Picture 1 (tube, rainbow, N blue to C red):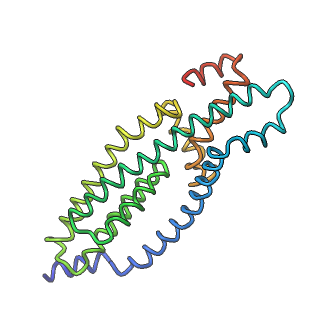
Picture 2: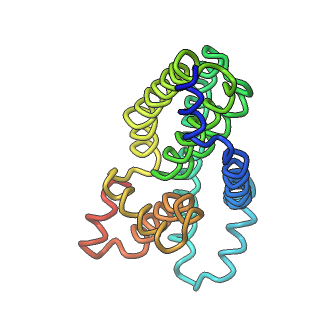
Picture 3: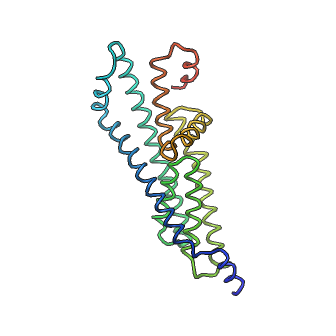
Length: 235
């Protein structure tokens, strides 16, 4: 109808290509940083003996035992953390894929994968992925009736997105943090925010593993201090 045509023209779908290009460009930078983090973490976990030997060459005599204990604990905690992240992303990917396929969204698997992967960036990632899913859902139905097709499909898809985020926030993330890094959610929130301010998106991605490693080292080398005991009591 004429009203719907006017509404669609006001929305300005003509800017979608430029907007999507910007998103893809930003996602490319994010992917490079993420790949670097995953590669370094994988190297540390897989070839930990080589990594450990390299560190031990710089450790003063008398601290070898504590250093080896720290490396072992860090490896154990990070292994559980990364396994938890894989399950977190997998759960989101499955939910997103099911929702998008049900409503016939084009390239459902690709969209679901990108949106699930963006969730690796704490707090900011879900917002970006929600916006991306909204845009791609609407753009995949261009030419259809706005009131009869675009609006209902987009609404249902976003409801599915919200359900997936609720599952992630109240099941996946608490399980990962409590079973792996053993830190209070408020701790995690503050660490991620500070890391994001100082180092941007990459800082937010590496914040939790780095924070966990620091806590383990403090527990091993400065456990005689009361503040350290209280700070690391859950490790």
